[in-house]
Length: 237
Length: 254
Image (cartoon, rainbow over all chains, first blue to last red; front, side, top):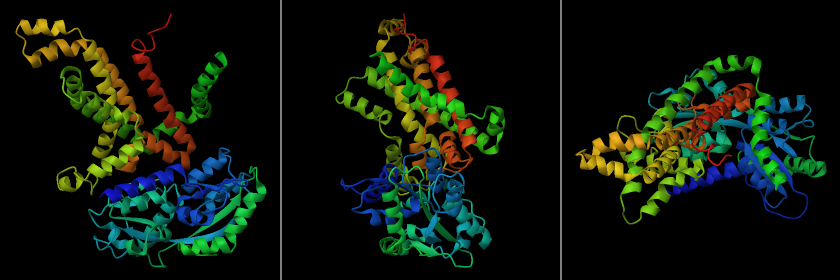
């Protein structure tokens, strides 16, 4: 119990405060990224002069739109990024990763969930992401494709919150990216009903350190980024 | 000094002015009439009044104990029960999960009772709001009880009034203003509760998505709707202050 609380607390604080690597030397850039990228980006940024801030993609769009002093933005769907590109706020976006959805279940799968159809079961507490964020929209598409009607107990505002509520045992199941859960706590969604979420990254026009921002994007698209992303289960373009 | 004071005023007033600038006045009524806005408004009113009821029913006796009963550790207890006023609400939410969550210390044992488990339910929202709001009522009521001239109660006692009768007919009317002020602050705090609610009770439209959560969610997809709802909360906050004006804002003026 105590460990659950500690983990929950740590996870909450990590998302709330946005973790960053701590290297004082050189110019420090700020990267806004979709919540689902948290671990992969932290791996990639370790030792580099990068500060990360993770949130739901729609919130990232709102932050960049409001003129947040950031250098790079990476979202969990092309739509969110397109809005920024159309508004002239970012340079040409490039796709750097892809992801699929999976069913997150409590450790050991005590509810014996086998597939999407089980999520419609009475009394099962299912948590989804809000359709305002990409993970929620994808989850809705996946459920529609599978013809499953789910009555969620909560629509969380970013995908990590969904994974957290299931991991903490408050909810029985949720739909998250495959990269959000350990294999033991995931039930696969067949490709036929699954979607491929692509992740675009772009340099923010208002960046005060264009060179460092572009260097980060190059690193993300290059070998270090590919290694960090695939180690966390992302698909590569 | 005046410069710093001006900066202080600007810091506090400009964001509110900014909010008013962004308000879609022409479509405000339409924005507030959408089913999502209506659901959030209704839910917020119901839950915050529920939280206020919990705060009054449990908080007044607590205030009475703190004001009237001398016991070792009273100061410590007072500090503990006012802690939620300064505690980050999200921490309160984590704590509520640890106790009342489905796998919480009490939640796991109470799980089969009606209304449990509390997370993702409207009673969970009320509990989270009561947790953060009750201290405001307790502090104000205790202050009222301490300022009260006890001779009135003593007089009632000599005339034969029993304790409960005395409390209801003498004490309660005398601390009325403090109680009302505490209730107003407590209700406003419950209405604005976000962190503990979303952590403990989640966010489902019509069930647990109260105004602040709806504003946060709307900010991401429909900013106009979010601003419209924000104006409602701003108006409520202003109203509470105006109602309490005679009590606090008026004091110290020329």
